[in-house]
Amino acid sequence: MTIDGNSLVNGAYASARALSSRPTTAESEATLTKFAQDFTDMVRNNEKKIALNLVSGADPQALVQAITETELAIETTVAVRNKVVEAYQEILRMPV
Image (cartoon, rainbow, N blue to C red; front, side):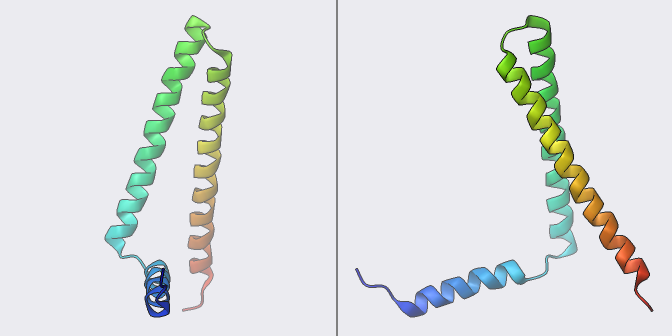
């Protein structure tokens, strides 16, 4: 098996360049919209699981897992929101 160093370097460079490039506004909006939709879907699904387990009393482990997943998703969303607000406030503090 022969490893071509140039192709490895070019591939790594292309990956790094793609990661370091600034996303367009449309890409940012699409990413934010997808994040919000995924969050909403996950919370709705877990609410259904929680309600079903509370009514039927079927599986306490599934109930705890659904509650934990929902809690983690909410904490992550709040952390992202806090970072966005912090960045916005930092922009407002910049001298013109």
